[in-house]
Amino acid sequence: MREHAADEHPGRRSSAHASDIWTGRAHNRGQWLLALGGFACLALGIELAVDNSWATGIAALAMSVVGLIAVGLMVLFGTLAFLHVAVKVDRDHLEVRCGHVGLPRRRIPLSHVVDADFAPRVTPRQWGGWGYRWRPGIGTAVVVRRGEGVVLSLGDGRKFTVTVDDAESAVRHIRDLLKPTAAGPVL
Image (tube, rainbow, N blue to C red):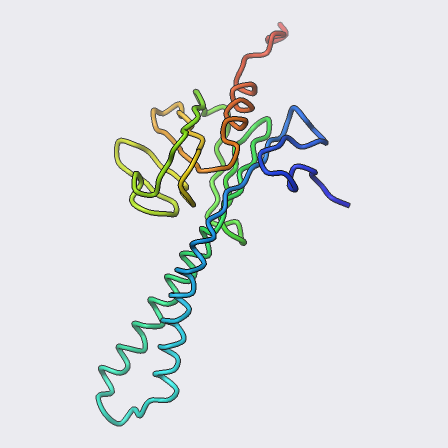
């Protein structure tokens, strides 16, 4: 049995709690090409370590093997972590999970959110590339592709941006949750 019907349709509110949960995703299939490049470096490093004669130039060969394996692992895991992003907004938090493992993860209490805005065009170029980014004076972002995104203004003056499909509905949902309740506190 499925937990949320919204998982099948990114950017939709969950049918179980239509006013409580919004989920959305964004994908970057182009990252697979970079992941293949990382895998190629890793494979070449292993090939050098196994098949090469260690009799000549052992220091240079060892540095090449270690360098290729290190670069291959960094590129492979760095790109796989940002193939896609999943965003979940419930009554209390906005949660961003990256990649298949869900790391890195960022959870922002809505009590820390002042406002939410729709960004029609977020690009990796604005943030210095794909991934989890920080730019002084601008804020932090999770950018997995070009396109629309959600920009949160936080209570401490910082901003948090995430690229996600159907960002306009996410902004509407967050703004609905930020509205003060009519009942107010009971005295």
